[in-house]
Length: 101
Image 1 (cartoon, rainbow, N blue to C red):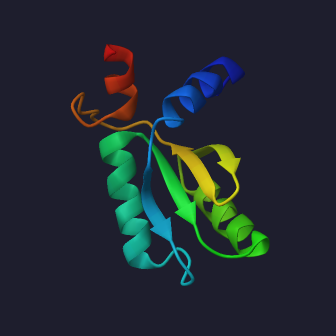
Image 2 (cartoon, rainbow, N blue to C red):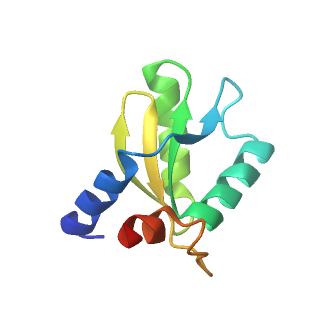
Image 3 (tube, rainbow, N blue to C red):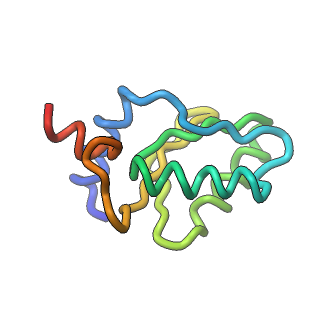
């Protein structure tokens, strides 16, 4: 992914609220299922990660290892995560909705 596209995604992500919160149990199976669903629906989401710096870094590394998923930006305990949807729904996709404005 090039820097121009990342900059565009950061601009879109600025308006978003976290779609998912990862708490003390980390990336458990239910959290991964919800992360997968949210990325399929919205393509670009914010994930709030609770914990100290090391715990947050560990969770971010795990998210970044998920196939075809990329962490665009990290600000404090919030990560902006992108994955292209297999069948994007223009009504749900944050990227499609932002380009319509």
